[in-house]
Image (cartoon, rainbow, N blue to C red; front, side):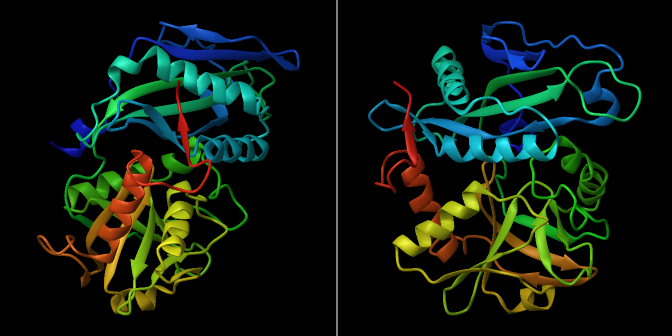
Amino acid sequence: MSKDKAFSYNPTPYRFVAKYRDGSWDEGGLTEDANIVLNESACVLQYAQNVFEGLKARRTADGRIVIFRPDMNIARMKESCRRMYMPAFPDDRFMEAIKDVVRANKEMIPEYGTGGALYIRPFMIGTDPVLGVKPATEFEFRIFVSPVGAYFDRMIKLRVCDYDRAAPNGTGKIKAGLNYAMSLFPIAEAHELGYDENLYLDAATRTYVEETGGANIFFITEDGKLVTPRSETILPSITRNSILKVAEMYGIPAEERRIAFSEVGGFKECGLCGTAAVISPVESIDDHGTVYTYFKGETFEGSKAMQLKKILTGIMEGDIPGPEGWVCEVE
């Protein structure tokens, strides 16, 4: 199955909607209407005032429905709202809304063992019309879900991108649509050239590894240490945070630090991590004709990256005990 078919929007019967007006959120609730009606001058259309999140619900072997670390997504969206000058949706109502939408669409959750999940997309937009550059005063918060398969279904080929994803002191570390809009032209160009994704370097010096357009990156050293980039301009990935903790749990040395691009040729393994990607192997990184190769064919099996993927996926699907609070059951 191609990436586009495996990870794409598949409408489900119900979604959650709440609206903010005159300084407060209304009660909100489930609806079958997937459409949003906006004024032509709505702030989200004119000035891209929006934030979003992504998480997944899965079935366990014994038939339960679980969600992986939703509290982290709620906290991250609150920070995104702060930076985009938007009112955060209350934590307790946010959590219940996630569960409500998953319950209402439970028949759409892929079966255990298929590799599929129910992708959950909370988002918020500024809805009232503006013309001068200013934040909205009215907002709409929604959660929809979509059954999905794997985001990457093959070894990933990266190229070092000549475009910048995020500026220092900008919005690179929040999950706002405008950050992903910056990657649309470069990803289309990369696909045309035969690559799966772009690897972005820091915009200030172009000497440090940042992330790709849709996922964080990590490396494994020759002596088996997990190394991930530390930067103030990349998204604080919940999956990256989780694999660092999994490594600690299983005695795998791990380090989060600035990674100079000059180091990438010395690593043994490379992978992408994120809600959509989970952990996906990187075959190679092409730096304008200089190619660094990490995986070929079946070499992902038996690798340290695969070990981490199996443990993390096992926790996500309820097969392996994880830290307290990591798996939230939907009753």
